[in-house]
Image (cartoon, rainbow, N blue to C red; front, side, top):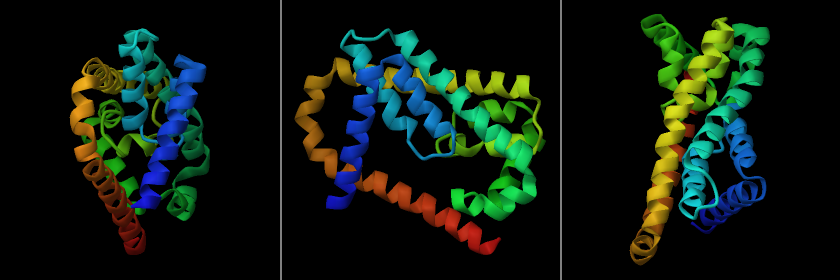
Length: 208
């Protein structure tokens, strides 16, 4: 528990420092990191941006657009990594990013079923949104459509999470009275979800 608390504490302080120092550009930077297949959760980045908005230090729409813009920026190298590396390269080295054959097969099914709109929907799904650019590159998705849908899907996601942070900030006094009672539960939930995600992907990798 102490290790988890330390990791989460460092992560929160890092996000806070980047956003308070760089403003909207900090939001874009952090969201770009997530879209580069690095598990820096937007579920932590965007609500904090919303909290900053609640303090009157940033515009609500600017924060949301900065998040979506960052997603597009981070998706560019990830898309081309899949585009030029190809399926065989990702199948061979994807395990280092916790991307299994099943993940690629699932991405294929999404695109086969929903076409280009799969990229729009996936940008609003936790976890999946982090690595969807790689399969898009592998599948040679049309760049203009892919990046447009990436922006639109990420904009919806950004608005939703910034709004959550805004409302939390506006009711911070009420949260203060109950937050400590639930902080251990929150840490446990995050830890369990993270462990389940890693276990699930390691299991898929072993089955591949």
